Length: 222
Ligand SMILES: C[S@@+](CC[C@H](N)C(=O)[O-])C[C@H]1O[C@@H](n2cnc3c(N)ncnc32)[C@H](O)[C@@H]1O
View 1 (cartoon, rainbow, N blue to C red):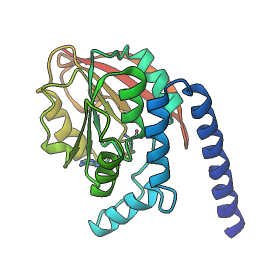
View 2: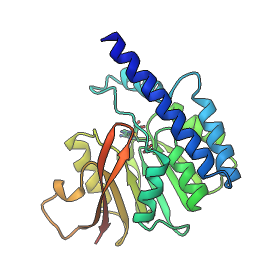
View 3: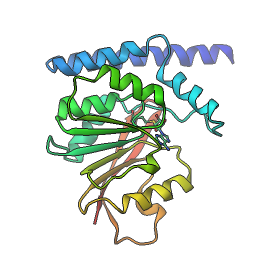
View 4: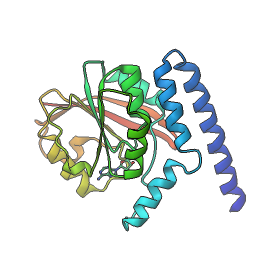
């Protein structure tokens, strides 16, 4: 058992190293992105984002303390292309985590980004490291208490959310503007509502996350 866990940890470490090298090579021309990304990475050298999330969830008596995960930036790149996200968009990232995808969207796509995250440590580190990035706003709050009416794109990687939370969130997403793009990972909006007159499914993608392949749904608010 111990050897198996050690194997998983070592494999994960090397996978992360590989992703980091690819990220550095692929985006080397985006100096501002690389600087922000490295600053953020260094903030998690001693204590990983997974640990911060776990400690927060333990303190809040959460039933599931392993909610955290990160969208690989190459996957975000593919999703952004498929969803036609441009610099004119205002992307709301629901549950932004450490914020790597937020700085990617802000610096590589050049769009306005609003990061919504419940873990104060993530928000503080993101604000501290990215204060120079204009058009990147961080809201440290429960995502069920946020106004989404200004969003043109919403990205939500919350594969483990419970049905009750998803239904409350969908009620909130009904307040978004017509034509807002809503991207969800692992589940689609239409599976949780009776009417098919509120959202349309534009595309279903199969993409890679750290733990395997996931279905990503690109939907539009009608
Ligand atoms: C799977 S992680 C995704 C991180 C990031 N979006 C990414 O793709 O790399 C989900 C994040 O949602 C946050 N989260 C979960 N429930 C939340 C809530 N009710 N309000 C705000 N954030 C929440 C968690 O703290 C976690 O950081």
